[in-house]
Amino acid sequence: MTPNPPQSKSERLKTFLSLERNVTAASGAVFLLGLGEELWKKFLPKYLQALGASVPVIGLFGTAEDFLDAIYQYPGGWIADRYGRRRAFLIFLALACVGYVIYLFGPSWPFAFVALAFAMAWQSMASPAIFAIIGDALPPNKRAMGFSVQSILKRVPIVIAPLVGGWLIAKYGIRAGIRIGLIATLVIAVATVFLIRTINIAHEAHQAINIFGVWKSFHGRLKRLLISDIFIRTCEGMADVLVILYVTDVLHISVARFGTLLAILFTTTLIIYLPASKAVERVGRRPFIIATFCAFARMMSATATLAPCAANALAKLAPDNVKLNVTTLHDISFFNQDLEATPPADWVAFREKLQKSNGVLFVTPEYNRSISGVLKNAIDVGSRPYGKSSFNGKPTGIVSNSPGPLGGVSAAKHLQNILPGICGQILQQPEIYLNGVGDAFDDKGELIKEPLQKVLKQYVDAFAAHVEKHNQ
Image (cartoon, rainbow, N blue to C red; front, side):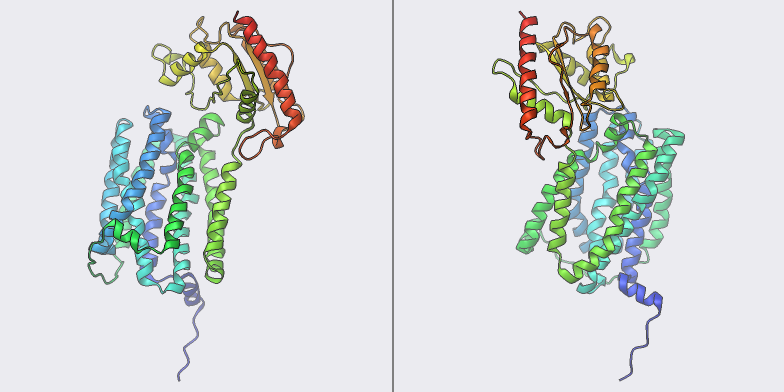
């Protein structure tokens, strides 16, 4: 028997990474077009905002993106089975390019929804096709690594491109920066065509199977995994499209720095992929799926903020004759005096809520020895137009909180300087500055510190009496 010749280092690397020719070509196509799309895709909510879209419209855009991502998968797989992998890729790329052109020339935000319907063809329809190529080209024991390499190549652009996209937006503005990115994507799409044409997998047309037949063919464990994945992605999708608005409009972090944060996030993801895929081949998939879901759950529970928790605790401790309606402020668009003649709907709703109330209780964290920008914006919106403050005459209370030792006292004092000219009588005693509240609430936002409960009860009873006195 003639022994097999020793493999060179490059051949060993190809074997280790499962770099079969067709898999490499398909993954390369995903990488190339992703490099173009990620120049602008994560910044689309800001682009829609620049085109005049409101926060609810931007949220609807995110919902539409997730909905299309879901429903496009099945026709994408059907087309790949029916017409072959290479032809399917070319169809999806052509549809996506139509979307890029509509994004580029669309004069207002409604056109973005039309563009989305076409552009999602590549992101969503192409996914089943590349999975099919990996399944066709690699043996079962190499597929986990094949999927990992494809996932890495798909995410490398998310590390690189947002940095460039953020720089373009910082230099040329949101509209021009996005449009430059779209032009670059169309140029990259031409190069992607040539790479797709190198894919060569024997194709046999398959008999069409309806979606219910596909579902029935799945193993029970796969069905349970898919259902759990739906729940996870639903929770993730609730905030995904609005993250950039929160980071830039509320936290006042620049778009360029947001691109840097994205790069850090996805660099971490890339570092995990290869060791995880090799471990999966050794110990099986279930432990890593469970670990991933636990990480998702921890990330979501860690985002609970202290001020809403304190406000909800006060509402629960209020006397029976008082109803505290907890109102969060992040949905109120930025105050702009030029819009006073025709105020946005969210301004009107906030002002009406204030006008219907008998009193106002501010529960605020402290940032840089002051109140948050979100609260200051809400005060500006509620106190305008000049002479028509919706806070006017409303008995007022102030509760500040901080995980540190000072309890947000500087924020409370700042509020006491701002409010006298626009609201009613401020409750002077008792004063309340909640310090060390970092561990006062559990993961569900429930108050668990008994001493703090007594302090809050004392204050809310005093505030209720204050409101009653000034509404007689």
